[in-house]
Image (cartoon, rainbow, N blue to C red; front, top):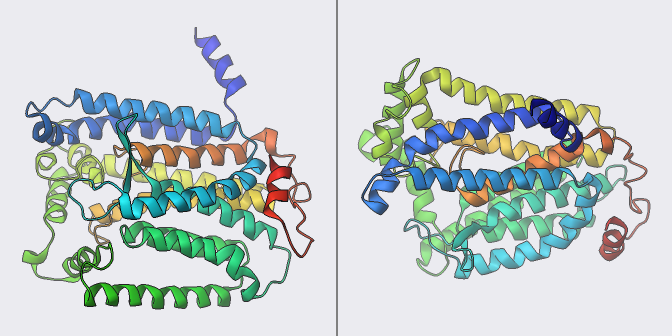
Length: 410
């Protein structure tokens, strides 16, 4: 039995084995805090406090996530060029629909979710849009990497799609829009895009965002937004007045402070009964309360290890597109983890970002798994033959027809 399992993994799983191991370890570890932290949700929703249903739901999400990883990592990474071109307009349409007709979750004013009636589930379209956009940007930057381009030449093929996606997410989910935009700028820097051009687009974006906020303040209710929520969170974060401190931040601090070095023990969290998002946004605080600083550092080290493996794969790949692709999908996962941890320990204002592969939730887990699958595809030895020359797709031509690129890719 043992030999057959080893044979199966050796013949069917490719890519960086260390990443496979860390992802599996995070997934297995996630059952402990999710099972414990979801007790308050079970009590409020069902009145019995039975968390088995939440545990099963989390297991299903993770199982589907690993199916996604397996399927995606089998796709040669060169095909993601054409896939990103095909999916980008689809995600823009979904974002528009979500902005105006999306489902409200947990009483939030923001419309972030699409409800799928057939499966009785909700899907966060911004998660899909983020990964599609990052792959698209990696594709474009690799295309112009060996060229000298003007800022004007890059506005339509690069910045119009970026600002469209970010702009559609921004009114309802400021933190996600800010993270996506920051990751695009970082990727542009890694791809050799002129820094002064990044400064142009950053300045323009700040002006546009400021105008949006001022308009929302001047005409309340005119635009679907959460400006008041953003400002209150920032004011609470920078204020020294303890009375202004947000409720969930205060409870997270208590959880961390009482966790000590070894924690209270698995299933013995007290603050899980008071933290509204104890199984998602503030799950790291529950981890420290139950497993102490040892458990907290253990989780942090796992994400740092993923970052290390991404850096190693980045330096080993000769293809510019491969380098940018792994940075495009890998860095946001680690960055989101650091944001979630930073919020829990009160280094950042509350953002609503989950802890990848650990927090409960379907779409966040699945899109993280898509990114992991792409990383494994890039790291696979079977894809090492893809050179820059093979992946240029008419890079030396002045104009490029996306349909031609897609036909060559698919």
